[in-house]
Picture 1 (tube, one colour):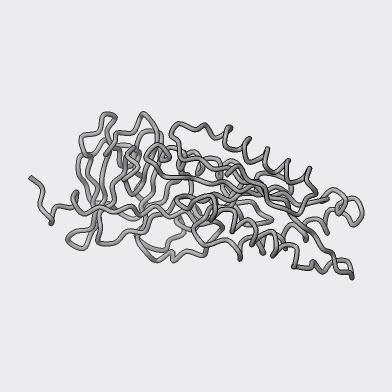
Picture 2 (spheres, one colour; picture 1 turned 30 degrees about the vertical axis):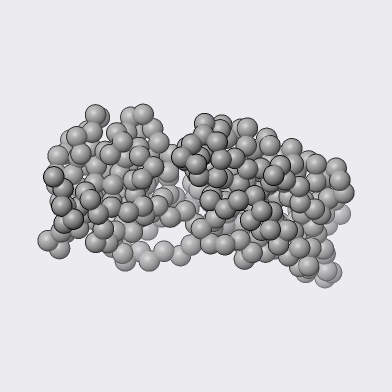
Length: 298
C-alpha cells in the first residue's frame, strides 16, 4: 500500500510547451528530451517526482508502444536526484546500461524506448550545447515559432488526449497578398513583414499556446481545453491587431492583413491530417469571402 510520502503517489503533470523560444534558467536541475517525438521538451525538477511513460498523466508523456504506461520515475531525496524503473517491458537505460534504481549525475542520459532524455543538474557547456542543437531542430529562425515538424509532433501529442474529452482547437493564419509584397518590394522586406506579424501574433497569444510556422507566410496556433468561441475570439483579436500594425520598411509604411481558419475537435483518434485539412478549408473559405476575416467550423 502506498502512503502520501511515497514518491509514486505525489506526481503532477509538469509538461510545459511554450509558444515560442523562451530564455530558460539553465541553473535549475531539469530533464531535457534530446531525441524522439518530444524533442526539446524541458521539465524542471523540484520536490515533486516526475513520472515518464506512455500515460497522458505522466510528467513526460511519450506516446509510443515501446514505452510502458508508467515506465520510470525521477525524484529528489537526500540532496540528490534518483531514477527508478517501474517494471517497464523494455527497461530503462542509464548511459547505455540497464538500470533498476540509481543516482543521477549531471549530463547522464536516460533511454526510454526510442527516446533519449538528458539530466542536467545546472549550467554546463554540455547543457548549452544541447540547448543550441535543440533550438536549431525545433524553432524557425525568422519568427522564433516552432517549425512545422515540431509543431506537428506537439499537435500529435495533444490529439492523443482528445479521446479523454479534452477539446482542441486549431487556428491557421495566412498573410493576405504576401506574394505581392515579395514581388513589389523584395524578399528582405517580405521577411520584415513576416517578422512584424509574428511579433504581433506572439504578443496577442496567451503564453503556453504552441505556435508554429507551417511554411512561408502560414502560421498555426493550438488551443487545448477552451471551446470554439474562445478560439474565435482569439482569432478575431489577432486579425484586428495585424490589420492595425504598420510595418516600417524601405522608407515607407506597409500594411498587411491575415485570413484565419478555425477547426475544432473533441473526439478521439483524430488524425493530424484531418484537422489540418479542416482548418485549411476554413482558411480557404476566408480567402474566398474577401480575406482579412475569420472563418470556423464551429
